[in-house]
Length: 350
Image (tube, rainbow, N blue to C red; front, side):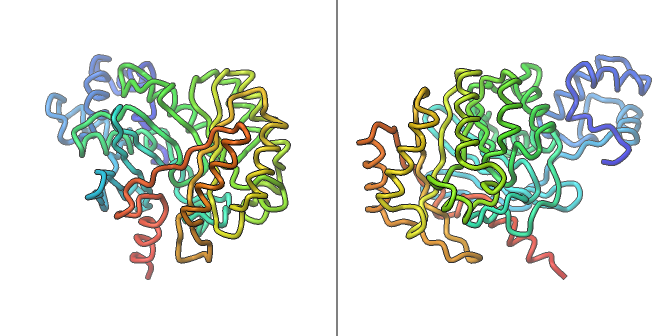
């Protein structure tokens, strides 16, 4: 990629200028863009002259993501992809089927440096950020493979989206364009572990997207034990940023809470969670998405049993906080992100 123009990361005007710089007519940009958004390789773009393709190859970077592995749930049709990138790195995406259409959960980085102790994606740390073209590429590759359009996007895969801020912002602008994928901002959700400075910055972008906060504990003592980011920005600072985001954008925020047996799933934790949310975010609709932890071999964390999960949810509801338990899709293919990449890395280790 170094030294060459990343053409899938370009908006229409930039691509047209680039094509003209190669000595080609600007209408070729539209043809090229149409093929790229179908996930087609350069040499397979049949209505483009060979001489033009040769110039693009020489001066531009374009690499449709390759499917390294694909798992399909026999239970609910959830599809999990392991994609190989141009440099041999791996990322994961998951496509989920709902009544309203297909939702794709995409990765934002190769690895993650946030260090959340219950998460497989952060094991081994962060390798690099994904370019806007690689963010788009996950959606394009899945759509091309399934022959179906993605209607919703959630950025909850491998990586911390707001730690890759500039590339994510460009991706948001690109994915919404009618000459591209045309996905509505209101159908896009970004999850963050709580980079407070970037939450304030995102609120100024004026995107009508949904923001999800990975909270996972109701107080600083418990949160710092499982989420190192809390050592930099405490819960008070994070929730004040959330309140400001809602006031600025009018868009509701969803709080994600992973339930870990014996760590954060007691009645006392539910009481504390209610209190802290109402204290700092009482001016906005409160919604907590409860997620039984995904057990991974690298940690000793165990999933809360069904009774504990239901009791935690009911405690929140009785206190006036809307709570839902995330439905576990693709349970037979372990559809949560991180573990396919880990297994692929281990198999390539020398």
